[in-house]
Image (cartoon, rainbow, N blue to C red; front, side, top):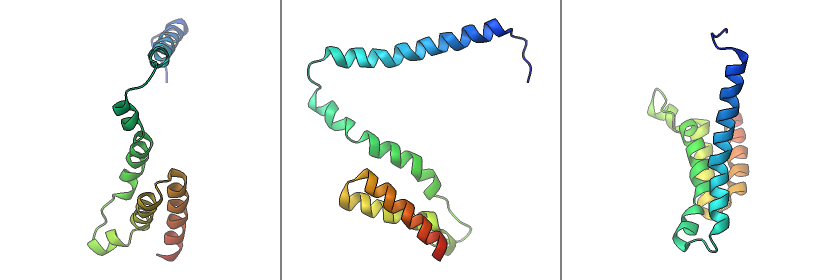
Length: 112
């Protein structure tokens, strides 16, 4: 793919975007370094970030309607997702949820 921009223009844009990205990320490190204690409500809300990110990554792959209801219910990804959700609810451990979910996906793929 060719562009009308020269190599120096591309490098200037890459460096500018890299510098701006660094500034945005460093601003949060600087901001939280200046605060002695984090407010309890923000700290409580940040505890849910890993679970929310994991759910956002996995949910589109799990929720995939099939051509029929029986095909949807027999989908190995849905079965593994339900098993992983049960483990997450029961143990509240991210690593156990990922491990059991992967094992359930492998087992459901072999059985179904």
